[in-house]
Length: 153
Image 1: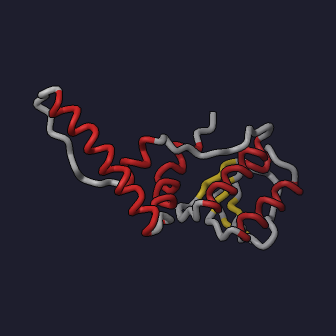
Image 2: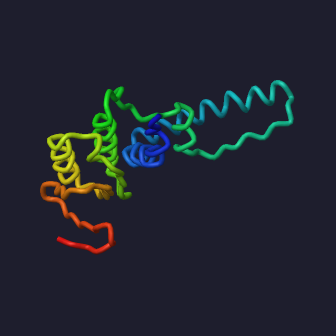
Image 3: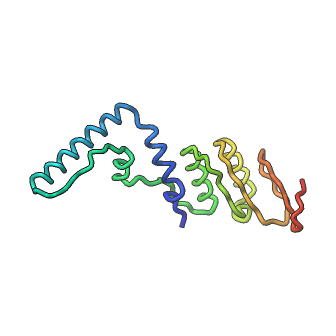
């Protein structure tokens, strides 16, 4: 199973937090203060020896809502690849994606479309293949190493 949340959770949360404006931050702070006062009065009314942290953390508040990556249900390996590329592009992913043996699972047309999409979104992708024939992606850089580990053009 493909777990997009494991792959992209940190980037998603960073992207969400980066897009919080001053008005939204003020609104979140007011909500946090109301919640804090409710729990604080509960602890006092029950005479519980409880000390609540009054530190305002937007990331912790976001965690309450359990954000997750919304991806369509893939029907094929190509759909999985397309979802990964779309998600990485939407989150402005800076890490290099490494793909293995994708020429075995996708048609030439699908691979050409993926290559154009990767370039359009300015993603860094390394595709490693084990093949007996030369294959070039459009507008991509390719290096070939034969079975003797000799590079050729």
